[in-house]
Structure formats: C-alpha cells, structure tokens
Length: 333
Image (cartoon, rainbow, N blue to C red; front, side, top):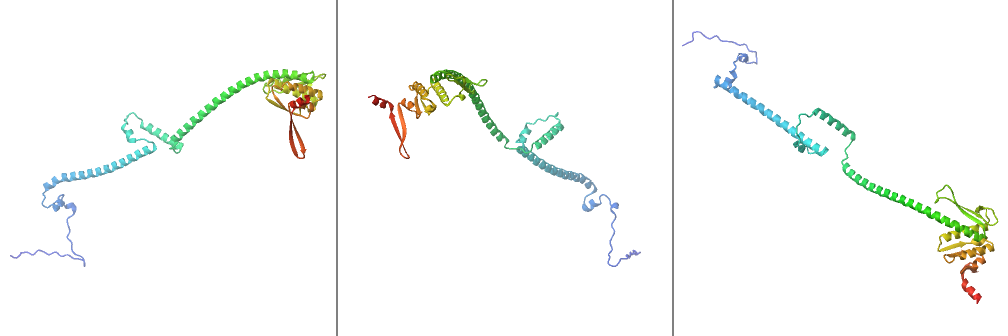
C-alpha cells in the first residue's frame, strides 16, 4: 500500500568539513531518575528509593574510616610526644615521668595558671644559673671530704697551739722563778768573790727596771777598795778582768760546769792579783776541770799538767807535755 502523502524531507545546510550533530535535551528537562534509569535500565523507581539509605551508610562509613585514620595519626603523634617528654624528663631531671604519673592524683582545686607561672619563673632562674655541672655532686663529696680533713687538721693545730701556749706560760713562770733565785745567788757569790779578788771593795748586780725579768738587761756596778761606786766601764783593764773573773766564778758556784776554758785571763793582772786569782781557782778544782791558756809563770805553777808548743825546727811545731806533780816530787827528792 502506497503512502498517501509523502513525509516532507528536512534539509540541513552544513558548512564544508562539518558533520551534523543531534541535539540532546538539557539536563534541566531531564527527570531525577534519568541517570539511574540509564545506568540501571532494569531497576524500577521503587528500587532506587531503597538504595539511597545504603549509599548514605557507605558515605558515613567512609567518613568514619577517614576519621579513624586521622585519630590514628593523632595518636601516633601524641605517643611520640610522650616518649620525647619521658626522655627529656629522664635526661634533664633524672625522673621517670611514667612512674610519677602513676602516683599522680588529679586535684580539681589546683590553679594550673599559677603553676605555669611558677614553672616559668623557675626556668628563668635555671637559665640565669647557667649550665648545669653534672659533676657537682661528686665535687661536693670531694670538697666535703677535703673540708673535713682540713677541719681536723685545723682543730689539731689549735689544740697543739693551745697546749704550746700553756707550756710556754708554765715555762715562763718556772724560768722567772729559777732566774730570780739564781740571780740572787749569783749576786751574793759575786759580792763575795769580788772582795776576795780585790781584797775588799763592793760589787752589785742590778736588773733593768720596768722590763720583764727574762728580757731585762743586767747592770754591773763595781767599787774597788779606795774608789767611789762606779760603772764597770770606767775601770782599768786589770780591774775589768778581775771583775769578770769574779762574775765567772760566781756563776760557777751557782751552777758548776764539768770543765772551763780560760784564755789569757791573767794577761792584764799584776802579780798580787795573779796570786789571788790562783788561790780562787784552786777552790773549784775539785768540781770542775780548767784549761788555761797563759804565758804567766805563776799561773803555770798551779797547773797539774802543762802542755807547750815548741818549734825546734823552722816550720815544724812540736807539743811537749810535763806532769807538774812528777816534777815537784823529783825536785823534793
């Protein structure tokens, strides 16, 4: 059967090199189920309504997964910070932060603002103190040991000094007493021997006044027969020698010595004074030995043993000894 009326043909004018495209309806004219029907052509409109909650749950699940990942990363960061804080506390303060946290009790009344202010002030003080000396404790122990040692030494020295001072005080007292007693005895002996050597006269010993007895000077005053009382510095050489001999024998009588050496004592004496000196010397022969260096024959005559130095040959000295007792016995025979 032939068509009664022919369909009018549409003609399109195309530019050279271009093809004809069919226009699709705009998205605004498409219904909400357009894409769902295109993807799932077999799904009816009621099935699409049931899948929407499932998609929402999947979205919530994905959000929870992202949140869980964020929390996991945050937990790792906090764990690293805790480890760093524990290491710093152990290194800087020698404290176990975890052990301290176990004993920590949360007090709601704690003013954390004030605690932070105090912590800041303490940090500033520590910075002003400078670097921390890790050997301070050991150095303190060594210094304490050194201090105790030096303290003991100081105490020993103080005790020793106190003991020495007490000993010196006792010695000073004893020396003053003995010196005073000996001085009185020597003064009396000096008076006696001075009269024997000079055949009279007067002699005195005086201590310097206003000075400690142990540090005072001694003044000798001698008055030979027929002369006024005067200082020993104004006497002649022979008188000075006899006065010194009288003082020497006065000391010998107070405190005898085992031996005594007299060098040219009689050099300035006259013969009469030499005889008095020899007679006084004989009184001490029984308690002391005397070595006398002299050129006086009268003094040699009272010796028990005589030594002489001769030079029979030039440049050659020879010692000669003579027993005076043997010589006197031979002369008597």
